[in-house]
Image (cartoon, rainbow, N blue to C red):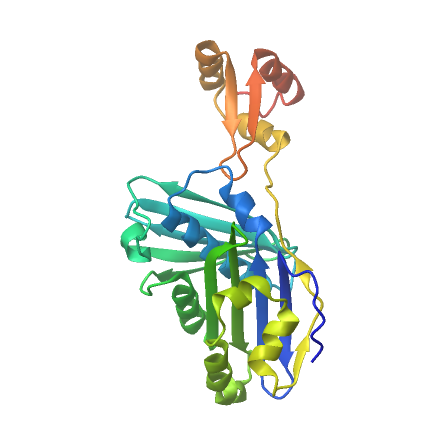
Length: 295
């Protein structure tokens, strides 16, 4: 196996075992993870959870065989009511958390979410939307995703996710192994491959390129590593989308806000952008979208 060192930050790499019916992915996320955190003052436990969710979503998004989105969200009745990451087949990611109570730095998933569930929504650009829901019964995001595949897809799946600090910056990384669909024979060697995967150390996932990680874990196996895909933070908010939202609101509600505040400030929770609309902006919007804004 080629051990050539390449830039591996914010990159997802797919691989396949030639002698086993098992596929895999490795992802390393630094800048993407940091950009999700930088506009928020999340408690450490929430930061870590978003890192885990980001890795899981990136790995799941890589399984898409079509153009579209995957949204992975945790919902519960605890002090963290919502944590969500959205990604697409281009590995463009964004995420946010909603907090309604105090969360200590050492809080567990159960402490944060209380009674809840994980919702995985697959939205192809062409075709029907699919949604799977699994109760939050595991102690980690990885365990919840594994339960999802076990219950919804009947696919043996292993997720290893590590979140921490590397070179003084937040970082998240992970590895996925999965038996190929319709290949029950793959389960015979799956246990051995997952046992080897569990020996990976956090600092190895954080610092090493996929080539070297796979060599350290599986140097006795024939592994095909495919070209990596860049992962990046990208928010889909825009002024145009805000205009579309405003066009659906009652005119008297918009006028009331303008009268009281002097403007409407539409804030994006994902990236922190503010879109400001004053009275003149609203008048122009009504001229350009007269039918939509007749309420």
